[in-house]
Each structure stands twice: as structure tokens, then as C-alpha cells.
Length: 378
Ligand SMILES: Cc1cc2nc3c(=O)[nH]c(=O)nc-3n(C[C@H](O)[C@H](O)[C@H](O)COP(=O)(O)OP(=O)(O)OC[C@H]3O[C@@H](n4cnc5c(N)ncnc54)[C@H](O)[C@@H]3O)c2cc1C
Image (cartoon, rainbow, N blue to C red):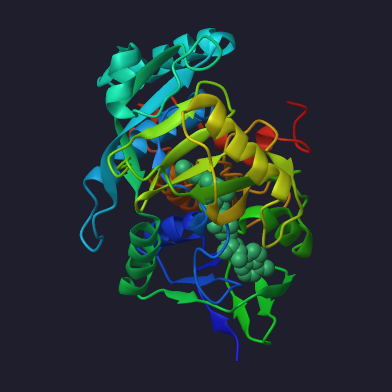
């Protein structure tokens, strides 16, 4: 028997779940997730730190807007965020990038301070402050470490509380007109509106539905986890990132995680870390700190999927009625999720662009798929 819904959502990552929670207020949501648990792919592999050292102006505005949700979540959510410092560092070659990032961060935040060597060491005593290593730094004291589990489960609970369903183990294998969907186990679902929130697979889902793909690019990112020196208690250390995309590190349950900030093109898949990228991460930690990575205790990789202009996409496909894109969340899908969910809700319903989002300077033209090839030359 075919199950019907008002809104069918493909993808149980942060994009699908957060939008689903908002849409569930307006009708029956059924969210189909291929894996046995939500968040198995990118959303469960993120380091979930909200900061302004990533993305262009649109992404930063969405990031700033989303902070209020994380810090004061609605009923039904557990605590979603802890305020943690974000420390940005530069070597000589990165100085102008650091200045620019400080200017941008100050435009969104107050608790920003330029630091000298002693000031930076107060936050992270392992920094290697030397002419060929760190020569400048600033801190944004109010970065947010998000709790991905609390976020994903909170949105899933909100969908169910409004009478919707989150169906795990439901891999969509075919999509027929307006919109009849079949899963690998033979179940069928139907709804007038289909939300494509399939992350790295979003273009493939579009092709399955006969909709023109947007040329989304999944890029792999690698994380290593290692033991800090025995004498260092890293629990209170900040998120530390170079002013350009080169290295970041952050405490992780008494250990440290680090990334070479890699972006290697990959197919949509269960992404796995590459030995070389892991070695590069370890080397870059030793370049900018006094620490050596002697043993990698844990590692993972995940896909960050981008549109050509690196801005997330929300909006109906220009070439298919009722087919809604919610894709291209790149490296900021969690920190922008509350804003993007609000945008998706308005656009799916055909409601006016939210005034709250207008106030951030973000416009529909920046977000809708029409801006991208094949619909525009950009
Ligand atoms: C190492 C790393 C660090 C990151 N750090 C941060 C960070 O600090 N802050 C931040 O905000 N973001 C960060 N990100 C980015 C963030 O993880 C992504 O932007 C976000 O998770 C994308 O969410 P999504 O829902 O679009 O994709 P996903 O979480 O991948 O969800 C898509 C889902 O669709 C499902 N699916 C696909 N095809 C089908 C089908 N045919 N049928 C049914 N289901 C299907 C998949 O199984 C998957 O679960 C990081 C990412 C990585 C990899």
C-alpha cells in the first residue's frame, strides 16, 4: 500500500531533519533515510563548531542568525551548544588573511580580541610562536561547539511530535512523477512535494526524478584524533584554525582532533580517510604547535558538498513542479541549519521571504537554484 504525505523528504541529515521539523507544523512529513540511523554520513562526521572563519558573506550571515537557536533552543530540544573560544592564527604569509578574518568576525561578534604571544598561549599553550610558525593571532571568545546528536535527535523528535515519520533503512531507488517514490525494500510513498536533502547524493536523486542536476561537488575532509602530551590538559583549549585553510584542531574528549582542511573530490560514498591526508594533518600540527603526533588513535572522513558558488541551495527546481532542492550545505550545514530550515519552510510553502532573514541581508536570489548552472551562467 502506498503511504501518502504532504511533504516527502529524502535524506536524514541535518538539512532534511531541520527542514522537516519546520514543515511538520504545516502538514504530514515523511522523511526517508537510506541508512539505519539518521546522521550516518556528513552530519554525523562534522566537527560541529560554529565560527566565522568559513564561507562567504551569505554563509556568515546565516551562521550569525542561527546562533540564537543554538543558544536558546525551543522546547523539546536538549542543550545544543557550549560557548567555546575560536582562536585564529597566522604565519607571515597568512597575515593579511588574518586581518581580513578579524575584520569580518568583528562585523558579526563583539568578543573579539587581538592577541600577542602570551595572550595566545593563555588559550593554547602548545602554539609554536616563531618567525617560521605562528606570528599573530586573534580570538573570538564566543564560538559555539554544537552537539550534533542533540541537534539531529531534537529535529527528529519535533517531526514525530507533529505526527510526521522518520523512516530509517529506506533507500529511495526510484522516483516517478508528482512524486511517487519507491524504496529498496519495495515500500512506496507519494506526496505533491518532494524535498531533496540527500547531501552528496542530491544530484543523483534529481537524476532519478528526471530533474536537471546542479553540478554539486562532494569534497572529502579528513580528521585525525591523537593524544596530547601527558602534561597538557586540553579540555579547555579552543578551536584553533589557521587564517587560511591549512590546519585546524580542537579538543575531543580529552584528546585533540586535527584536520589538514583538505578538499579532495570524491564520489558520493561512505567516505574513508586517506593515509596521505592523515600524514599531512599530523605534519601541519607539528608546524604550528610544539606537539608531535606520535599515534593516531582515531580517524574519519566525510563529504562536504558544494554548489558552484559555495552557497547552500534551497528552492523549487525551475524544471520540475514540486521538486524542492535543499542541498550544497558544504562545510557549514550544521551551523547554518536553523536559518536554512526557516528559509526552506517559507519557500516550500510559497510564503513571503522571512523578514528575519531579510534583516540579515540574505536574499532569495542568493539561495535559489535558478542562480546556478544549468539555469544561469553565473
Ligand atoms: C570532517 C567534517 C567537518 C565538518 N565540520 C563542520 C562544522 O564544524 N560546522 C558545520 O556547520 N558543518 C561542518 N561540516 C559540514 C556538515 O557536516 C555538512 O554541511 C552537513 O552535514 C550536510 O548535511 P546534509 O543533511 O546535507 O547531508 P548528510 O548528513 O550527508 O545527509 C544526507 C542523507 O541523505 C541520505 N540519502 C542519500 N541518498 C538517499 C536515498 N536515495 N534515499 C534515502 N536517503 C538518501 C544519506 O544516507 C544521508 O544520511 C563538516 C563536514 C565534515 C565532513
